[in-house]
Length: 102
Length: 262
Image (cartoon, rainbow over all chains, first blue to last red; front, side, top):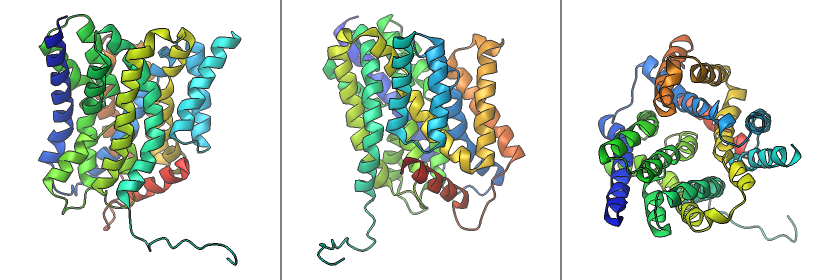
């Protein structure tokens, strides 16, 4: 691919990605009082992150077993309060160890 | 107290920007690792480290960038690229809508827009967890640190990606998911409704990835359909109580997340 077109693709990626972020805050400026919509928006972040995590984590590594172990042990770690970076590290180490041991 | 220097911390002056930068550090370190693996893909697409740095700094979208670089690598059209960016990033639309309820009503539009541009899964997570109304500078601070590390990771991946052993690259692939777990699990422990939502998401997401017809569509679109459907049903089954004070329920989440991060 030619150089100038890569730059156009990068510009398009940047513009589209940020427009999606900007649209809702520009349109919704007031507090929503409808209980149903508030509840919906309350659950959205947890649901979307959970949906993206599983089963994708299983396919994210060379071995499905390593991914499954990272998922299971990762849940236990997070349940007992491991923070963001330690969770990320824990999951990586599990995959590395599984790969080494098997 | 005797013999110790008592440092006078200036009252309860909130320092949202500095706090944001502090909270951005662990996120950014995780980002660096994840972005490194993204850089390996960007390298295949023909991006230089400089281009990767700039694109990552101004985009900060893991799935979106992954999709974009994969398309650039196969010479796809601009239309395909645009569609891919819309679909893989559509969750930011929902997160942005969720974020609007977290602003002080007096927040000017330009600050809302700037804050919205900072949204990533994790930055959104900690912004929603901010106690009370969100101070936009908290989000800016977190984004500044995390965004620069994200961009640096991409550049590093482009430069050094080819030299890393395959086992390490494979292990780095789960870093992002580990961070996601750290965001959704602690609130699930404290709030049975969130636990129900998260469990349902895991189960249905898995079912839909193996059962047709949903298994035939790409994972980005599936994420959007499932997010809307599951949130809609749980919101109907377990509505969140609307207290007279703004964000009663979201403050509860804040406490959970702070505990989780310690």
